[in-house]
Length: 157
Image (cartoon, rainbow, N blue to C red; front, top):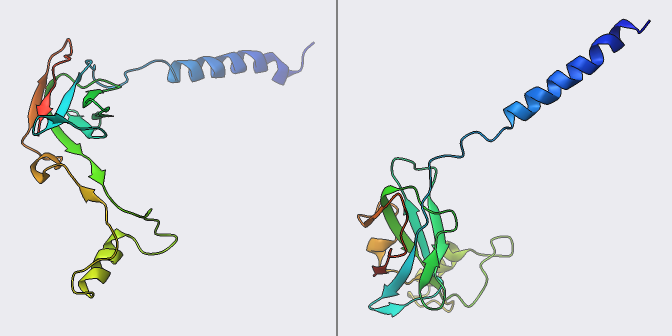
């Protein structure tokens, strides 16, 4: 005769494993996505290293982004949520030093220090090269992402 605790151990183990796999099952991973790619130019010239951001306001936790290559082309790795998306961009250049707050002053402190130096900074601070009207996440620039995706999401900034 088996001890009482042995009688229930196997069924309880199987039940626990079943609940675990059901709980970790492939539930919804958010809204559907559509493949999006295109080209970013500034004054007609392709720009490398621009971060392109797509955000559907109906699903704010499911934004997508990509970086442009040397020809200004990009492809959103995760795709974008179909519908009207807000689009914004970022590309920072310059800075002759790595800004590491653990090792010294950050960009804000260096800029404040330059004010005390008659506005003349001896440090080349990083600078946003994208026009400000395109860098704000609440930008007015939108793009309608079709359900089937697009390879024509081109932007001339």
